[in-house]
Length: 349
Image (tube, rainbow, N blue to C red):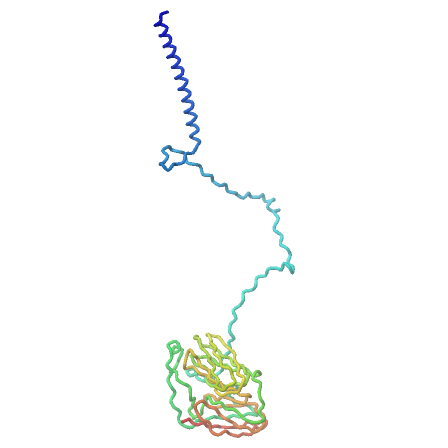
């Protein structure tokens, strides 16, 4: 064999070896590449700050929480489900009782004093004793006015108060009848044999608010007697009680909503205690307080009656806010007899 043949064989053998090695390396590269590619599919790739991932990655699956659905029990099993047992009530475990709904207490409403005055005029007082004709042991009569009283003053009301009026509102200083008799006069007795009365034993005196007037305008009560202030109007009123400067009675100021009432008393005798209204400046009422019940207030016809008077000798006196009283009249009351007494008052200068 020549030298050239040997080199040719060597070259062929080397080429065969190189081809085999290349084939083996190619197969190994393919296997390694397949393994790497298969592993990368299972590893999620997060985006980097340098840029978005170009490879399309599968979206991660979101785990949906499982809902716990109630498993219905068979009818027989459901019937035997034990209910919670409540302990019996005792001193340490009292029964829970819901309190009843508290009812709204309505104010005490007392009917206003009955009056024979026409509806187009404010009512007047009959005092704590009615001006009627009694049987015996009584003093009856009239009070007459001498002179011409000044005309009443027109009252300028606000629109809501004016809407309640049926006539032109004026002051109520002189209530004179066609025969010259004078209403709103307090007639009372003075005498040693008169017993002091307990005002708490008498029915209450009612002062109402009617069409923005206090009625009665003039009234009288006994020390300790209940006085009920009521409000029949659809408006709010006030009762500002103003005793005299030397009075032993207590002043106060109370408000009255519609259909509301208040109770007051006076502890000492006093003439013409003023009750005014701070809401409506024309509203006034006057209460005179006596130590006994032997008094009356004349009606619109000037009549009065003092009943159940003990037999004895008395003086009959009269009080009026604007008129001056004439001299008192002395009377003698006999058992079972009615005594007549007419008084006169004069228009003050």
